[in-house]
Amino acid sequence: MSQRSFILSLEGVHKEFDGFKAINNLTFYLDDGELRVIIGPNGAGKSTMLDIITGRTRPDRGIVEFGQNTDLTQLNEYQINRLGIGRKFQTPSVYVEHSVFENIWLSLEGNRGVWSTLFARIKPSQRDRIHEVLKTVGLATQADRKAGTLSHGQKQWLEIGMLLAQNPRVLLVDEPAAGMTDEETARTGELLLSLAGQHSVVVIEHDMVFVRRLARKVTVLHQGSVLCEGSVDEVQNNERVIEVYLGRRKKGEH
Image (cartoon, rainbow, N blue to C red; front, side, top):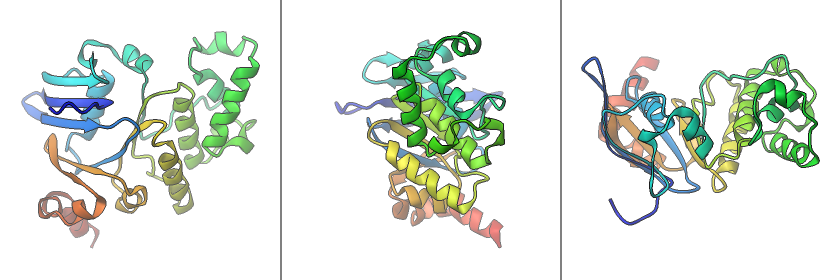
């Protein structure tokens, strides 16, 4: 490994499940403030990779580091989250009976527990932070609505806001465009682009139109390891990628 400093480093990571190599000698580096998109066919190891980073799954061997010297393999999910690594799953998970405003309030950095938060007096600094987050994710005008009444896309944005309220350094976002309208997809792309720089963002996605919209570096996973990395054009024109992933999708679409 070079002397360059990365916010996230995976080196020689392996993980087997009943003899199946879900992750196979995976090496991956993420720069501080970078937006990276990860693509790959089903079973390529994308979700397992995120599980390993967030502590849901322990690798059999390999190095997983946050910053320069924090070994994530020795920490549990809660500890990794507190370090500043937030994950958004494909299906939005919000407090449907609470307002949009309350969802962000419950997620604020340092808050402890749903009930203790709701019965506490909100501080002016917290109110300002909540409105800042809602503005960032495009839900400022929806603050008083129950989260359960939001559209699918709005729930996705709310959950991203709930992660931002925790002030994470790294955001792991799984298929954010799934089930969205074209307009919602475009707005989601703009949101993720706006977060890069202030946060490091990893996006797992299948929608190549959406991937091109983000127009940043793409990593292709195949059989648990990195097949190639590069720009969208470089990836789409790579013969091995066409063979194992993009070409297979095109055949299936006709």
